[in-house]
Amino acid sequence: MESVDMAMRSDDESPRDARPRDRVGAALLVAAAWLGACGGEGPAATGSAEGTSASGSLTDATASADTSAGTEASATMSSSAGTTATTAADTSAGDSTDGTKFDLGVGPDVGPPACDRGGGKGGTDFSYIWVSNSAEGTISKINTETMEEEGRYHTRSDTAGSPSRTSVNLSGDVAVANRLGGITKVYARPEDCAETNGMAGLQTSTGKNDVLAWGVEECVAWHTPFAYSTQRPVAWAPGTLNEATCKYEDEMLWTAGGQNNVIDSLEVVRLNGDDGSVDALIPMPDVPIGYFGAYGGAVNAAGDFWFVIYDTYDVPATYLVRVDASDLTYDTVPVPSEICPYGFTVDRDGRPWIGSFCTASARYTPSTDTWDTFGALGYGIQQDQLGRMWLADYQLPGVREIDADTLALGMQIPLAASSPKGVSIDFTGKVWVVDMYQSAFRVDPDTLQIDEYNQLNGPYTYSDMTGWGLNNVANPPG
Image (tube, rainbow, N blue to C red; front, side, top):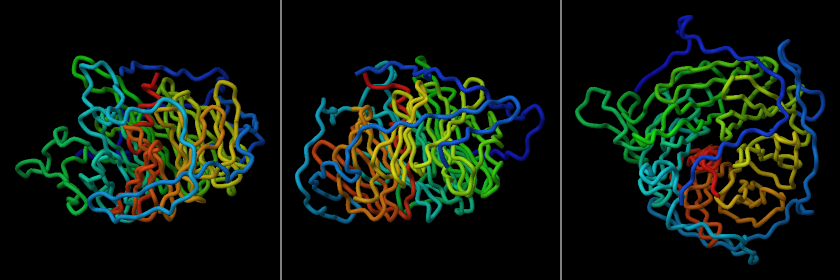
């Protein structure tokens, strides 16, 4: 395991500087690769001398007139090994979503057939969802097909990092952000792990009750410490597939952090995904933060880093921010005043989405600089293979569907959950919902079959937990 100390950098190793630039009103580049088979609206951000401000317009989308409306679906519940069986109450029958059904037997091909090694990409090798156990300072690796936990790993040496957001790259490996500072990468496949602890053979976790000590666990690839008191977003960029080796290269990792209630302390960092070294450090003193700061983040097809600020009451304005991957300049867009940002994703068309816990949730379209709101409240949000958006609905509680284009509210699927937070799609089209108590639910949106894994410990993840979100923008279906 490698550890990179940010504080110790010589001048020639200093990250590249970056400054705000003029906002570009044109559409973001959505580079479609091959595919085989975020208070308030009002004054714009005041930047440094080099930068200009940016604002977004607000339009209300035509959605369901009743914000709690939507077809409530009747679901069945089962359990798998290591779980407790739960039966969901029957509700009125609902209409299923029209459209071509996803082939549940085969994951989507990514890349040329010769390089289809599976990875986090839904091929035949493996597919995992990575969920943080914030209460114990670990992350769990759960097989999305068998629902068995195949590994659990510490995310900091002191176990006090309070891990939350996870992000999976196109190689299938995960990075996790500790809310109290530090990023850790874990390999998904034991064959990718190196023997580093001096003991014979490979030492790595095999499940929930087999958490190895920090420094003994050999599938922790690296840990980069940060002195932030709030560090939440983490998002892999696509990287490039080397068709000769069938491996992804130049996989870069974005994160953002700062100090609680220090209004000008926000920084964005880009890391080298191979060793965790700091590739770029981007101070953003003109983007005000409160206690929480940057909350959720994701990339578009070009690898640009989009993220949203959570704070709405203790800052002069709340912003959505985009960092350009090519020149490290950034744009800011004021978030509508009625939005309370929480969950975040970017869809395959490069549009950021915000799950909100007040008034309405929202979608931003960069090409038209337009906000559209829809009458559903929730937290985590992600788009599936058919283009449907799925939002963790804490009022139901459960998960609900939103049409990505019309913003019409679709079916609601109740879950036996206490506080559903995260949503992620797996590579067979199942919708995963992470509940804050102890469970992760797997929902088949077509059959409404629900499976539950309930051996987690204070799970608190609402990000790209499977890697589908990244794959959806890098290799959009079509």
